[in-house]
Length: 286
Figure (cartoon, rainbow, N blue to C red):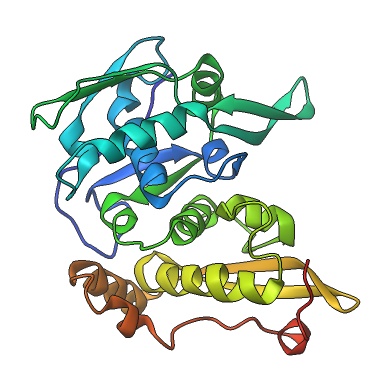
């Protein structure tokens, strides 16, 4: 099965979502996943880089190799790489799959066995592989989200990266621009640890609002998250998205090119507040 090219190097119009600037494709099944143990922002970005690096041969049962420097980023040592690799190897994720026309929940690890060189050598590499279940998912996937790598590295929270991926998966759906989730399901998709942010007001303030602000400032789409109540409690969230116009895309491109310093101040006041009756409730723990 032929796969799309992982990265495009040619220059193009920055307003075109497929302009050829550094992008990667990620199977939709690997976007709407539920982590049994929460990953960090660095973990999520690293996994995306491992997928992108292996893409041309990702369906094969083989070891892939990546320079540790590509994962290390601005950090000077490799301790963070070791910790992230261990979490990716030990974390179980769940996702919905179809088998024989029926819906199943598949559980699998994100990463298989790895070999890494010890020390902080700039030329060190990491050998890694993907479990069979993961390779099968990727092989059979027919829909993808296109992620801009420069945008991926702009986010300051894992919640924003998760929401961005959800938008990149859904943005081009025909005749659909809304999704509803139970509060617990939405927490799981964003990667909120269990028993954390149990009050919806905390979930909104510490996860939803910061993520919406970053995605709206940096992504290709604008997103709005509304609370839906049952009785006195907010039990569901409605996610609405729509593509940015030319002015919005230009503003996002400009912000991406700017230094991170001061970004939080620039984004202040851009949060999409929860709309509708739910916004006026005294939020109860969910």
